Amino acid sequence: MAAGVRQAGAEPVALPLADGGEGTLWALHRALGGSWIAVETVNPWQQKVSASLLYWAGQSTVVVELAQAAGWATARRRRSPLTASTYGVGLLIRAALDTGAATVMVALGGSLTTDAGSGLLSALGARLLDAGGRPLPPGGAALSGLSTIDWSGLDRRLRTVELVALTDVDNPLTGPDGAARTFARQKGASAGEIDLLESALGHFQDIAGGPAVAGGPGTGAAGGSGSALKLLSADLKPGSRTIMELIDFAGRLTSAQALITGEGRFDHQSLHGKAPAVALAAARATGKPSCLIVGKRSDDLHEEDAATVVLDLAPRQMALPEVRRGIERLFQERAAEATRRLVP
Image (cartoon, rainbow, N blue to C red; front, side, top):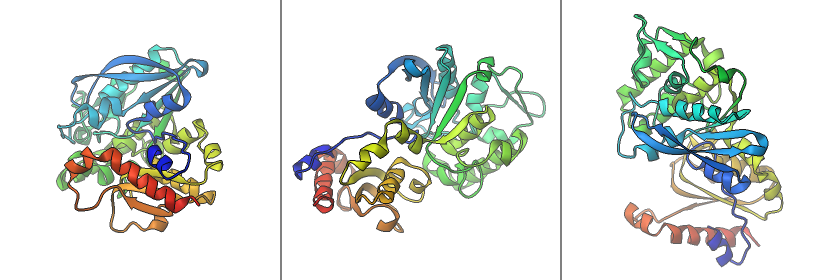
């Protein structure tokens, strides 16, 4: 995209953004630096995977990216939405606690899971038990059998650390805009499985103390992991806006003539806190013209819902393999076109 802006005769400022999903650590490291810490964890089906933490020594802060343990890249060809677990995310949080940091930030987004973060709670010492006092099996479907949550074994270090959850969306745990009904289909769930997961998440919420305790905006992030972090007394913050504050997005936008951003698919989910939508809203608020480059967009998307200009990344007749082969060229061409339209 930066090359396309230059091609059109303007000078780009390339600023990677993130909202809590995959790539959040990379974007933060690119903008703010920090040290990488290599760790081992497990994916949603307990297979070992490598991951990284980002450590800012000056702020005594460690950032954890949920997607590195429970995201698409950990198991691209497997879809078992009823049993996928965030246990590996809990292991990452434990590794962050091992550093002795005063603040642990958990980036929530890009998950393959819909387990309300029950797996990460288990990894941190909580016990989710059925009516017979037995631990539940992993995954969201099992939450239908939850009878009680035993907090007695919870990692004591959580009492003294500042825990922050960066949520990529503002969806609640349950309901028509909740974790199951909004996101489970793209994780491989059928209509019947979505109903089952919705019921299970609702039951988990009831056992955990109701909507006021385990629900609310952001608790549906990462398959409901926002709810688990809320139960751990985390401060739930909108990931996009928080990251933009950290990297001084507003200051950089002030000195720019226009904004060009993009997203793979832009639809109603995007408007619930995804980074491109928040960036476009910032441009609109400051009177800056903007362009959204999209791979796909919903049929009911209007340009006034998004950007001054909306450009499709590729012609609709172009096959996906061909798009992938020419992805850099396509982005460059669209960014050049956007620059010519937006910049006098």
